[in-house]
Length: 327
Image 1 (cartoon, rainbow, N blue to C red):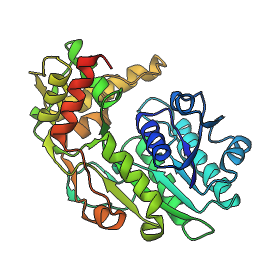
Image 2 (tube, rainbow, N blue to C red):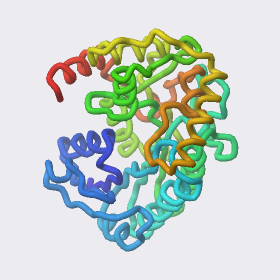
Image 3 (cartoon, rainbow, N blue to C red):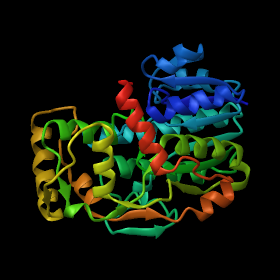
Image 4 (tube, helix red, strand yellow):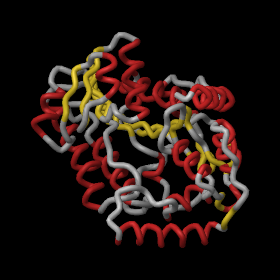
């Protein structure tokens, strides 16, 4: 197939691109600034924002499938900024794809679109809930997912995949932030690090997204949770990441309520200071670190014919090796 991948500068996007090319697909990419993976593989690259109808129309021309990864992430930004990129941008890409006769549209979403604050223990892919989802990122992604799935059958086949906490060598989000805070002596657990959480090793997330392209005709109009299916405590995950990087694991813990208040204060300070980096604690992060969230993967495995191949032990061995090599 010829496949357009938006957001190929991300860790997940770049890995998906490499895997598609390796199996023989023709890949084109779209993002705002040049992508290293495009240069590495000599791919056709379109530069522009996903709300730019002209550049998007050029990017979707002649493609069979779209994997839409591009999004505004994190917590910093106004509601309008999140809405513009994540909702309007998705509308533009979806409309252009439909107009161009694209057959399949895979929307890369997040389990946070259905997380309203309560613990998630063995849940499947609950309906996206933009009204009650926590944080502007989750609200905007929830609304975008709803619109993508509602478009299924209207001249295009659509499907959503929700990878949960993707990590691996080169990750600057989950792994990078934990290691950075450990190095600065600012890393602490919330609620003792006792909640069970799922995460997703990079290879497994990439293969699930590609499986969604291949199986869109079976899973169309639906969303699917993706994780390693190996719930562990937050404490274990943070400790193993620190150990892989050669850093000291956290020894301090704060109650969830205290972390939530600290997050609210930090968000306010960042807003007043007009900072564009993420604060060390946010209300959303306090909730994530202090609440269980692990999932039932049976539907994903059955419909997408997908299984996570890299378990946590192998993932951490690879992460340790990457730090040891300086990669």
